[in-house]
Length: 100
Image (cartoon, rainbow, N blue to C red; front, side):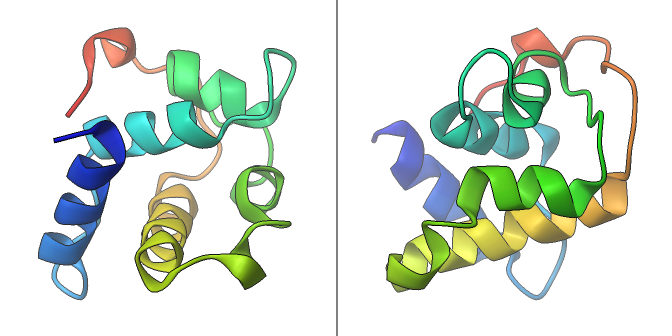
């Protein structure tokens, strides 16, 4: 099972019940980040959310959302909830060791 399949599986299992795990958020950020100088790369590499969560979400998914499949939209929506709940934060200890 590939990374995106694992992400979709977790999002389906947790939809409407609880938010995605830090590991799932890290995989999503890794799959969708916009390069090393981006807000989303900071999230992917360290877990830091250095700007408003909505801005990080827009950077990752803003241009992709309208053409996304139902599963991709679920992933994007679940990541939006994760970002909103996490808020701005510093790097997360142990983040680099997280993966699905």
